[in-house]
Image (cartoon, rainbow, N blue to C red; front, side, top):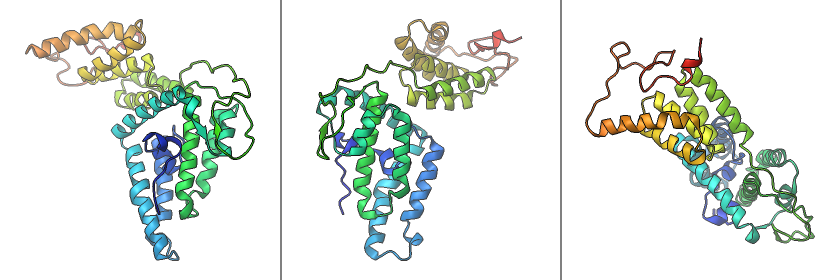
Length: 313
């Protein structure tokens, strides 16, 4: 059985790991792991003693060539971050190429016209997940169908409003069918989930819990990679962790996205100066009181003084 998939996002030389596991593209690591364990138990040769040798061989191939690589890509912090950035860029590319995109299933066409995209998309994904691996011979077509739903969701999330048209038949239907006028484009907005991550991160920063704040902001960036506010805050976190080069990268990004960002404006010149001293051989030594420890909870003093500490009573 061929494992080649040429529909949905796969059509663009992109491996749709979310489609393989049948999880939404914004699924968190816990949900991804839970889904992976469900699939692994289903496909492992020891879990189904009644399967024929042919079925066991196919199950093993699906597990080793599709499912395991998908889980590895989506569970590792670095690989997941890189993958989500590419996925975000893919959504923008699909919007530009919408005139040439065709949907091949009724479910995808219905999702394209759904008024509540988030609810309709996640409901469809959850329903498919229940039976995705019931018939191993149908797994590849089902993954292709899921990937087509992911394609539609990415385009809708990128701000592309689709024409609400009813298919005349089950044949391929152009995505930009002109028989019905498109609704007005959805206004650009920062993802509400990303906003929740950012708010939690701010609370953690105020408590000097920088490691946890960084995790929240990394998740926010996966959903809103062009959020200047998010880049600014994670730059601050890297600054607090004495990772000046990473802080500079994110402050630079913040200022590109929002030249008026006050955190980046306040800290970037100081980081540039400190990095300049380091490159010229001048050592930046900690104060006698703090030694090599993290800044105290008040956040006061030195390059790594807390931005939020000054507001505390």
